[in-house]
Image (cartoon, rainbow over all chains, first blue to last red; front, side, top):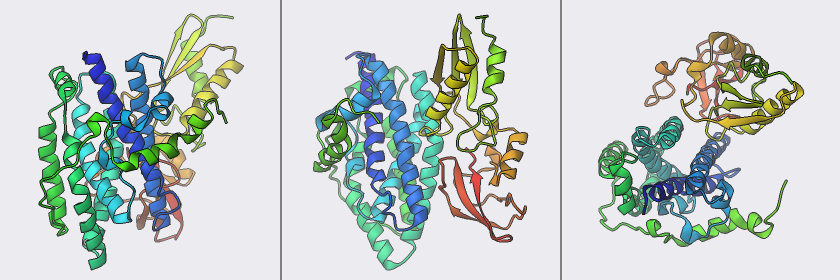
Length: 252
Length: 162
C-alpha cells in the first residue's frame, strides 16, 4: 500500500465517522426532550455533516478516480464503510445520546489536536477548523453529564446504564492498523496510545466526579476496520441512500 | 474587455452581505479571504464560519452573479479552511453593527474559557444591562447562542466567540 492509498483510507474513515454520526444525531430532530435541546442536537448533527463534507471531498480528491463526495456518501454499501461501531448505534434515550457525545467529543478533542499538527497540510487545516466545534460539543455534553449524574436517582441510573452499554465500543476508537504505521512514520498521524492515555484520564475524572462507575469488562467489540458492522448500520444507510439509489439522476 | 483589476473586484465583493445577518458584509465578518486574477479568470477565496455553514452556497452564487453583472463572467469560488475562521477577524465597527441589529457581538476569543462556559459577562444589546442569562447554547444559526435579559426581559442572540 502506498502512502497516498493509506491517506485516502484514513481520511475516508474520518469522513464515514462524521457522516454516520451526523445522520444518527439528525434523528433527534423534533424529538428532543425540550426545544433548546432540539436546537442543540440538530446543530451538532449539522456540524458533523459539514465535517463529513470536508473529509469526503478531500478523500475523493486523494483517490483521484473521479468519484465525488456524494458518490462516496451515497453509493457505497455497509461493508465499504469504516466508521467506528459506536457512532452507528441507535440514538437510544437522551442519557445514552449525551453519554456517547461526551465519550466521542473527548476523543475527538485529543485526536484533532494531534491532527492539527499533521504534516499533511489539508488534514491539518480541517482539523484546526473542526476542533473549535468539538470543544463546544464537549462542553455541552459535559454539562449534561453533570446534570444527569448529579440529578435524580432515575437520571443517574439512566446515565450509568448508558455508560455500561457504550463501554465495550470505546476501545475500537483507538485501534490502528498497518497503514496507520505508514502515516505515523511520515508525521501525518500520531500515536493513538498517547491519545488513549489522555482520553482515559479525562473521562475517568469526569465520571468519578458524578459517581458513575466504569464497567470492569475487558471485552471490546471491534470490526469496523474490516468493514464489519453492527446490524444497525445497514438500516441507517438504507434510509440515507434510498433516494439517490432509487432515482440516480434526481435533482431538486 | 479590459484587464480585471484585483482591487476593483475586492471592492465590488466587499458589498456582499452575509445572507443570514444582512447588516454585515462577508468582508467585515472575515469570510472573504483573497482574490486572484489570472488572465480573464477571477478566483475568489472564501472561508466558512462553521464547517457546515449553509450560507456558503448562497454566498458563492451572490459572488458569481455580482461579478457577472460587472462584466466578469469567468469566476471560480474556492473554499479554504486555513487559517481557520475566527471571530477575532470581526472589527469593532462591524461588532457595533451587530449590536445595533440586536445581536450581542462576540467577545475576544481570549476572554472565552471553553472549560467554564457561561462565565462570560454578556451585555444585553438592547438595554446594555449585564444581568443576562444563557437560554440555549445553540441558536437559529450555527454561529449564534440564545440569551435573555433579566433587566428589560427581552430575549437576544449572541454571536458566539469562535
